[in-house]
Length: 527
Image (cartoon, rainbow, N blue to C red; front, side):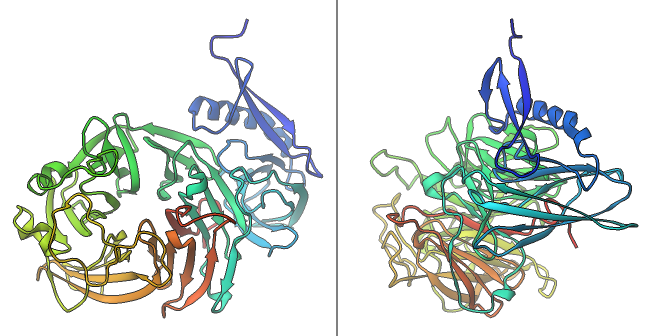
């Protein structure tokens, strides 16, 4: 008779390879289970199976290779072999019809006697030849190679995006574009290279990735509606945290001391998307730190539920960005087309200021919190992805805010509102090609109590979702409902545009966010 809960991991040869490439299957009491799902007991039994196999990786000429053992990256190849000295592993993935993908793999074994890493870049559903060279710090290089037909994309999505190069493709920054929250299969995150080729695919647990953050030697991300996971560079899930009583939405950030501050809905409340929860990654404890229904009680009393289900979505927070300056956050409210700063998030939270339409807040306790507009420019309409950028060239109390200005206005929770609206905002819900959203950059001066517009760049219109990412000069901009993202150079000219529509899809098949990551010191060796 099996034990009440017996987990067994079995290694088998992957048949579609010209060398011994293993896969790992797991059964609980004889019933197959997925290595993914972020269950730590399953991850641990897989880890033990890998340890048993490590005698196979006898040398760089004959490594241990295992396809996606932990179930987190569908085409990632775990590689391990014994060494005589430290060194570097450079590898190239070649696949018909695609550009070669070359990287230096990060070594996750701290000893000089073994290499352990994950080879990223195998194209789903295609024949791939991986050629790797181990170069010891002192000695001659050793090469190994293998050819495999990779399993098809688990999401079933396209493995090559439509790319239009408008500038010099050599100017594209290093990294992979992470396409997150793609509506047609929200529980996968797809990572594309600069040629638009799918190089990795995260298999999640029923919810989208809101973003990727890195803490210590792990990647932190949302994987379920109330589940946060930490994943190491080998693809192994090292911790999961379930936020019982809450459902996460839209965005999170990680503080310098390892706290995840995430936008959430408190499931026991009547209102939605209006609290901030803090999860301590070191202890696994979590707590509600900011309840905007309390901080803005007077304003909220003037709103009402709306829609066919009468949802009390009076604020609709859609981005959060934490700063060590006063333990503060910048949050974006789509419903009010406002940007709010909250100080002392983990102590006694207070709203420091609000940026937005003055008429929205007129007559409420929050009216005096509004910053003054310095200059003549339209306010944002339903903005997303507001991020603070501190700059040493600025005076104390000054910093920039970047954002995707959807230029959309629909104020559902205040049907009696007759005040002003942003001058360039549209009521059109969708991706009207005759309209334009914008990349916007504000300068905030807390000492003067003002904000001003320092940059505005028209981009494809998307009434909802979408994001911008400042890469330190170049930009990545995703216009979600237009089903397109692009990288822009420092002069705000498009270098390359990538379209992710499938035949028959509509503007409601958007990706919520597209962010670019280098994955240095995680998958790839940093400079």
